[in-house]
Image (cartoon, rainbow over all chains, first blue to last red; front, side, top):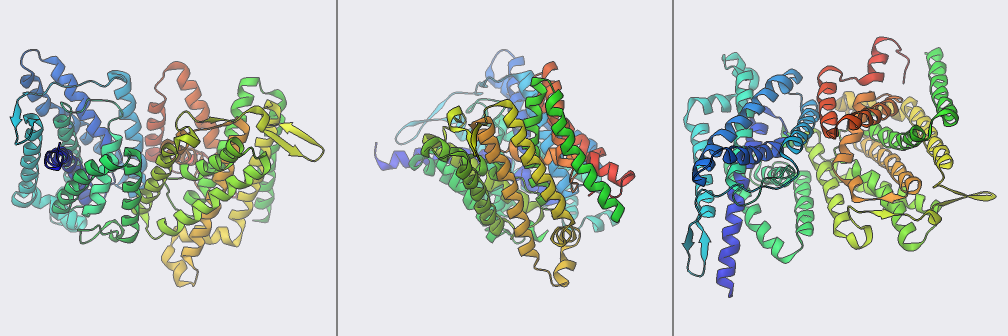
Length: 296
Length: 319
């Protein structure tokens, strides 16, 4: 095989990864941007989305597309509901104090992970893709479903952009992000906005997970890597910046595939994590964002 | 104040004496648990110096514990060193790592500090996995009993012996407790608390805040590494699991439960959490659930922890 097909394959696989990563990281970024909450349980919402997708898909017999469609609609909704409850029952009572919320979301991480282990079990289970056509590309056939994942992610990202920039809901969210007290003074129901944003962030993670389960299997520990990668994306992209998140997700998604080909995956993860920690130390505003964590 | 100080000294001495007395009455099983709890409480006390007193919420202390663990275990296992120099190596590894991480991570504050320490710790964990040839990764190194002989004047004692293990753990615990007690009463200890409460004001008053924080990180790292090295030689095992995120979360949990910024809190928290998980795991395998629920309930309803609440309500003189 020459360089051309090899490169095309690596790029496509990288794009699929970037597509899913962008959605997950966007959820994390929204939650931090608007609420100033570092949600350590974000990866578990992703995992919960995947596990629920398997469960919903297994309820439906018949064409796999039916089960997938059911999972695609219901799984993010259920996860968003769980996140909404977590916000109301725990985070709100902590008054969103940064250190206390981190501890609380760590607690949430353990609880969700344990419940998944207890009720879903330690096995990895696949969800059947809604269709298994192959697209004939110049050198090889490629799974049409993977291309669908990329397209779906782009559509969802555009949808989120529209929600944030062109609707009154987005306006309220941005106002809360800019100045919480002032927003409150203008009669914006800040606590409802917070609960909504937390649910939206978790829903995005679950959506990303539903898209990925036909490619990767659902497993109760699958939330750890996306959590770390999302942090990396959000830090490099600058928190709360949608454009930065997408650019960084592309960068990480594409380079991860390529780095993993040359180095061992463990070494790749080590270097990436170290690099990002150093970015956070020396350039806390991220490579693209105007103001970073340290400024808040 | 003077009376309070005497009472505090007596109380802490009584705890150590009580633990010494328990050696003779505890059944084997609980005897073993207490030895382990004392070593882990040293880790928690080290964490408390950074988190409780200085207000540095680190999510990466597992790397300091593991630095001590591997710093001691690797020379014993691969180079055939004896126990004393290996322990010294463990402490040195913890000190060097804490100073390097401190210099970098202390440039950030708050949430960024938590994430940076978490990431450095993750890098350390991945490093232990990457060098599986030497560390044997998750499976870990088991130190042979013959290598765990502590040279004392006049004789060699085996640390694999349960009685000896208890006494060594108790001595380490007692020394750390006394050190921690003296530290928080010292001028330096008070300046750490002041930095936690109002960093800007301390800077205005002419204190070198960065240097104090770095010193606090270094002390905290060395104490954590001491616990790690002791764990390696006492229990004869060093595995990657000790460098994982879970071991960064546990000291946080222990300190929160016992009471942050109290000298006794870390021990009380470690002891109770250990037994809580022990009792829970005899009913269910879901011990992560216990940890998760405990964290949330503590932070919601009991943010001062057990000793912290006792101090706020009744015993104002507790350090």
